[in-house]
Image (tube, rainbow, N blue to C red; front, side, top):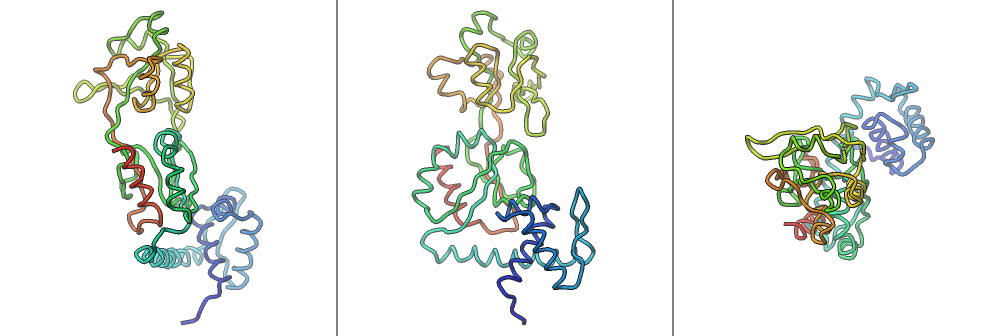
Length: 300
């Protein structure tokens, strides 16, 4: 069997990254190099092999028939290599390597910030890279080793590990707002209140989910304020600008201090836990099990 040089393996890895992302720019970002370096590598690879591997347009990059056949074999080969390297964790005292995770903003604050110092101290050889993004992305094609999302949104072909118990969603408001506008008792009462709305990752306005079982309903809550992250929504509620819908866990410090109050507690929703997920066909990435265990110990 002919041996591949380090440069040849690196070039093939670049080619796989471009095919998976269908973009020189995204591949360059995942590999930590410039777009021109990726373009030069692909051009040199095609010249060396004597075969055109990619069709390039102003909007996309897609493999040719030859390129598609090659990348299919390479992905399997690199997966075998990755699994073989992951197997070394059984013989290593401490995990080592690069760990890339995509997480929503709420998880960043609630789950990761409390354990980050402990994790980096315990596993100094792990290069942890966290991307905070409320959009649901394809973690495989985007080059992430794992992702964090609410349980019901995780693709079915992924392995999902709960990081929390089932989580409670509540409607909250400041005492000042409730004194001025009254306390809603039923979901339909919300239609006559100022509600602070949230735009979620797919750019849709989130409909408030209320109640459990047969009484469950969704309300397109009215309001003049719309934000795309929880911190700003909570801040607006603290200022008495309206009702907010959020995780009880997120609002807990303000509930404890009396700055916010839960309204319509009988209509609070117990939703799926927040989970860490990763491709089912891969072994656990170095350092990921330890990160999962640390977060779970802090939240279960």
